[in-house]
Amino acid sequence: MMETQVTQIKMSKMRARPKKKANRMRVVSNSSKSSVAKSKAATSTKYKEMLEEPTLRAEEGGPSGVQAEVPMEVAVEHLEERTETVSPSLPPLERMQPMENEEVPQPKTSEELVKELTLSEEILEEVVAQVDGTVVDDHEIPLPPPHEEEDSVVHLLKYLDRKRKKYVVTKEARGLFGSMSAARSDPTLQEREDHLRTKDLECEVLQLNLAKETDLCASTEQDCASLRINIENAQKSTLDLRDRLDSSKVVYIVDSRRVDEMIADLAKRD
Image (tube, rainbow, N blue to C red):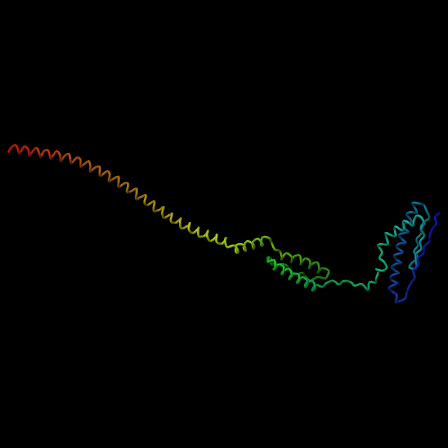
């Protein structure tokens, strides 16, 4: 049989009124030690069945103390490991302060949250004005409805998420603004546009003149055709006149010969 060690922990009861803080600390430590003793008893029962050694008895003596009997060689090592795992979960004595002295953070009211929201909106508007961006006005976003304090924070967060969409500066708007500023600042482009407009007007005038000239050419061609016909007729008439002249010459020659013959005959008769 292995020797056993009996440990008895007794906590003194302090009922003095000026020392309530110490009494609370000791009660907490007493409960923590009792939980450690219970964990030790649970582990020792398992080793009792495995090693068939003397039983481990854990008896809690109420608020005044705790009694525990454990094997010396086998259970001590495992109980130390168990206490190492349990003890970190327990708060230290120095950190355990009464709840009365702790300062509980008070939740912010809806008025304070609305003030913070307005300040954040003003800051965002200043930033957007510096960037020269476009602010999209969304009048359809409702204000957060008044609810209880536990729900007001959630509604305000949703409201802030929807408000962020107002201050969206799109790349398309920036590109359009850049193109407009470039068109205004670049004089050569404006001069080119004016030059093109004048060229278009000149082309329109030339087209009108060309139409007039085509009409005139058509009329001159008609006149030329009529003149050609008249020339052909005149040539035909001249040919006829030449033929008549030739024929008249022949007749004249014949007539002149007859006259000569008649004169000669008269002269012979005389």
